[in-house]
Image 1: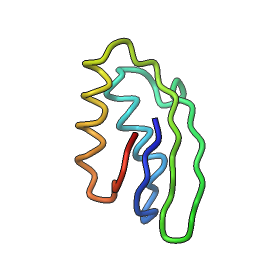
Image 2: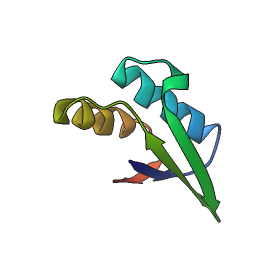
Image 3: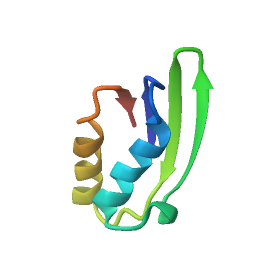
Image 4: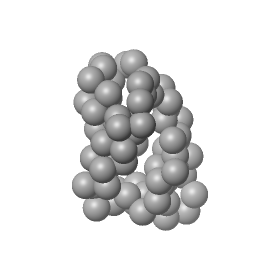
Length: 72
């Protein structure tokens, strides 16, 4: 999944932590890359999602961060 948001603070690692906690795995079990585009940062996350319900929980938990603007 890709998550785009305001790069303030440590956005990328905090988003990855949310994903890891939702998947009930360690931070290290989630691979990610980040790119900065001007005032936005894009974080691409590969996580061990086992079903659609877990994916929806990830979206719900990621949305709790006010810095998140888009996700897909």
